[in-house]
Image (cartoon, rainbow, N blue to C red; front, side, top):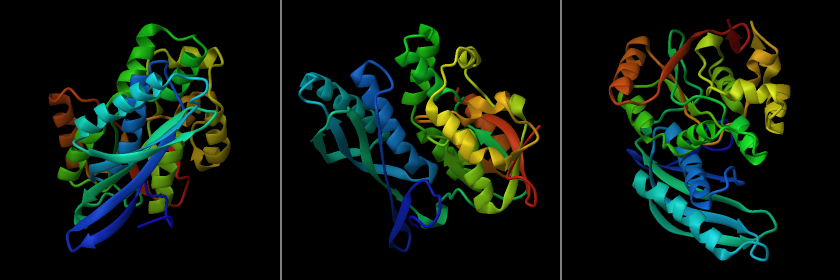
Length: 302
């Protein structure tokens, strides 16, 4: 499995019941604290392995650093934040590469393992499945407000908490319960990644807009015009796949996320168990719609 589809990672079989899951991701700073930035970037890179149902095992740092304008202590703190996330994931840092660059960027190349029989793809949803999301939306908008120094401290802290949270537990549970399909919600926004799932399966996702979780305070930031350019680009690219409800109410759903949650399609009984077990564990999970036969718009909001 490689570049021919819209999967979250590449998969290469190395044995009858074992395959590699390969991915990489690099981002620019979203927060001021370098350690926190490193942890966010690592969680973001690890997420694609989790979205496939895999277990991260090794990672390599990819750092682009303006050595002439920033002290190397900042780079050390970023790498320490990345290592902290990798330790939590149980993955081993095996090396990396640093490039002197005018713009600070950091990410990782991650390798995971998976049994091909338990692989979770993003194009295999089935009619009747329920759709579950494991993190609220709004991190792109909040990050824009952080850069403008126009965000309340509590909302900034909440966004950081979600961006540094690994998708490991949600991934393990979805594999255990036999998820039909999944993806992680990142740069293309909720609507973009949901579209990829629906189009890949040639089905329609019917979603109740009021159930889609958006962090409290994000609507006020939208009113203040603190909207990332990627939000508008996503809307321009994916809006024609959407029917039912349009316009401004959908804008946060186009917001490009960093280290977003998993969007999972599960059979109804499995979805109920996923929600119940997530609640018991104190983890976030919301059912926001269902999968229907294709023939109309990939995404229908009501």
